[in-house]
Length: 547
Image 1 (tube, rainbow, N blue to C red):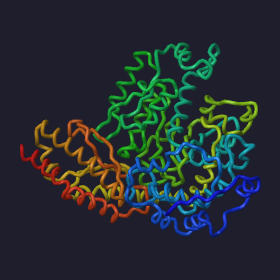
Image 2 (cartoon, rainbow, N blue to C red):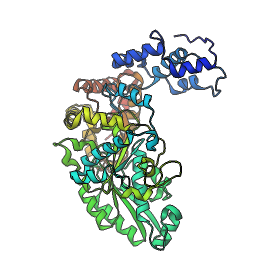
Image 3 (cartoon, helix red, strand yellow):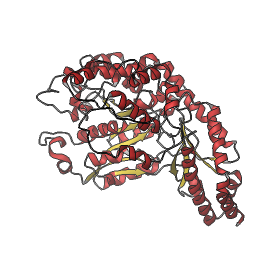
Image 4 (cartoon, rainbow, N blue to C red):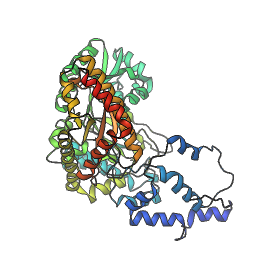
């Protein structure tokens, strides 16, 4: 498509038209809107280019930092976006895009999103959101009940009470985790008769008053990177996010956790929180939450569960026991834009106690006044869109039984894919799946068998070669545009904790079939044995034969 420039002009009439008159039915934008409404998958398939374009080349289309003096027509901008932006975006809804925590969306999310945008509510205060405020409180209550299952009287009392909050909506899991640990910090250094609280004095004042030399948060080495951001924002310093070693199942090592907690206490370091993970980003592992809750009680600290990925497993009667102990957490993060299947930009944190968020409450004279029902008084973010409307719609339209089917099929599919990998002579499964994330790598069976018995030097050399090849293979498959798996690093005990690069697959998209997964493996085998890669295979054979 050739982009030609017609000249538009900014006049009172033209600006008024932009705000009040829709595009004509024959316009590019109207045509795009109709295509998306009638055949979303067809639109994405026809407009997103399959073969990857180098990012440096894409950047050339966005290199001009000048704001144009004169406007252009909407149709011109729509053409530009189709050719330069949409064409080189990522088809995250594709059934073969299995590398990250994104998925196809239910069709109803598109028109409902349009309603949400048209209303343009601001959830910071009731004056700009009205009915959206009780709706958001209801959604938080529904997810609180999913986790904690309190009785009807509890929700009747607290769900809409302006002096309490069962949780907070956020833009995503990062802000949800920050909110949970912000509340934990402020309540750990709460006001007393002779101390105004950490909100006023800052961290140093809190430490001095309570007699501590520092403060720390403990999480497994598989914890999400957002926790380091949290430590930075809260003034703790990233060194005080204590990464606890994991066991062979990629769960936090309870012995190491207990020892580290005691060490911190002995050194007068306040343990602000233990963070259990329900669905680690890399392997989908669930920490032993009940045991962690016991340790949190022993050391009188906040227990937070990062369930951004795995918390919706609670919808499944079959798999909910994997999260046993989550109901003992003081707070739980849930990302609605992951396994609740809403568009990007919706995270939630729920708190067991309705009073915890009072520790971070702020007010202003013109909004979020004391005694008001303004949600912004207890959220980190100010202006926010009405994403709760989309979460509410998902919970109602899909229902518990719908989410149960989605969750169970995702986990069942992951176990089938794990079996497919284990039965394949050219791949090695690198972690047994707990939820719907797994890791594996290209490693022919004759190499796997050799790695079990070879000496250390040979093992290191072979794994380093495999690491380089895994990285290459992931990039080349992504570049071909048929499928996408991501990659990460693990340090398995069976390789004496040597770092290995592995493929990572996330199976939440209900449109991903077993046949598609088999095709992904088949393509990787073809790419691995391509003529251009005989060097790798010969090097690998030479390393094995050298022993």
